[in-house]
Length: 254
Figure 1 (cartoon, rainbow, N blue to C red):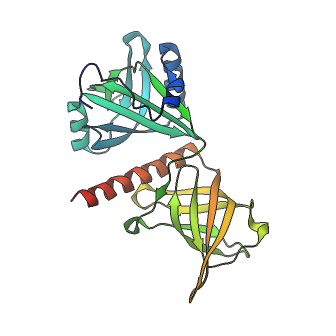
Figure 2 (figure 1 turned 120 degrees about the horizontal axis):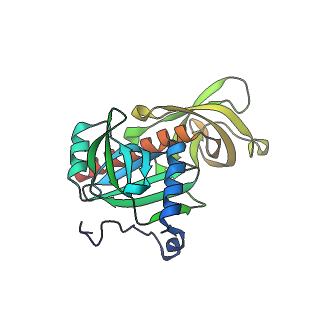
Figure 3 (figure 1 turned 30 degrees about the horizontal axis):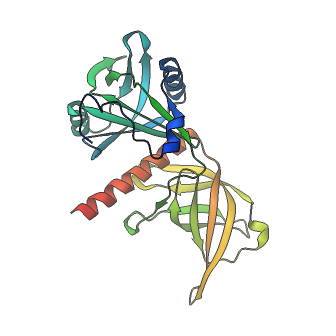
């Protein structure tokens, strides 16, 4: 899609049904954005025709100027590239609700003594709650483990994570699970998400499937949902998913 005046603030609607979730009232848009500021919600901002991104948070809304302020990213080169872009797309997922909006070119400013960006308020905002989350199949180069209390004892084991989303994850274990484990919740499970950070979550077992019997014994796939995850940890998880997707894209584009 070309970056021009007619498309600057158009959103990418993923289906016809999504259009009913578009917010066009400026009063409501400002209310939603202020709520996101209060919750310190993490956004991924895409630019350069979607080829580049930074992670950021909204800092303030200026209704009288029809503008809003958002934080700079951690990479100076990416920040400079953002300032040259004609179109920015902001995407966040907060407690299962996807928020997306687009705006035009940003300008660099000082906000409370720190570097920041300012841009026009979006003319429309997509606020969409999905039953399902995008699920990342964890590639080999980004293998991670989940430190979870052993299902049949007090010790802890680290299970390989096969796939992960903002709603839960899939694990592999060589232990056989009985039916009593289904719907059981395990507290304070640790996920080391590489450079994105480490998070602690509560996991609820939703499904367990025996896959194969081999020399190593029984392989069982365990599907869990996050029974408890803080907005801050959800932002770290989102950062990990974006980082892996970008690295995977870079590998295949070489």
